[in-house]
Picture 1 (cartoon, one colour):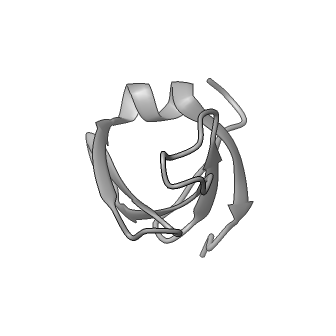
Picture 2 (cartoon, helix red, strand yellow; picture 1 turned 120 degrees about the vertical axis):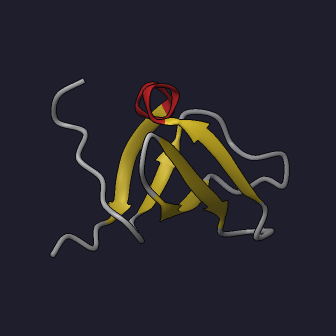
Length: 65
């Protein structure tokens, strides 16, 4: 998917909210898999990059350098 650029420490919004009710996540690890942490409850999830790109709605706060 073109146009979806994301970087380490970006805050992103996913298509489905987390069960805690928050829809904001912070990218804390990047590689073949991406680890994101829920801003609301601090729970972290590791998902394959391909699935992450599919589920990403938009980047809210970018930390591009």
